[in-house]
Image 1 (spheres, rainbow, N blue to C red):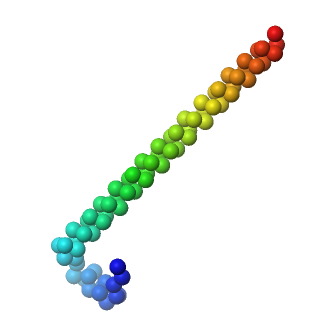
Image 2 (cartoon, rainbow, N blue to C red):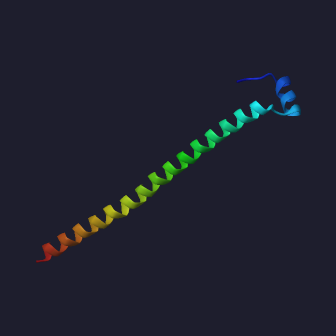
Length: 73
């Protein structure tokens, strides 16, 4: 919602009413919860990526060493 500059200045000088403050608190709480959920989701994604890559490298290293051993015989 957009307010005129004079109304914004009035609100800044006078403060919010109780109902406006409650509404602001609710919106702030929702935004904080959304940011927390996003952060947790991103942490999970990056943790999974880190775990998967070394496992693939270790599996590749094991298969290559087996190939080398079998070709020596």
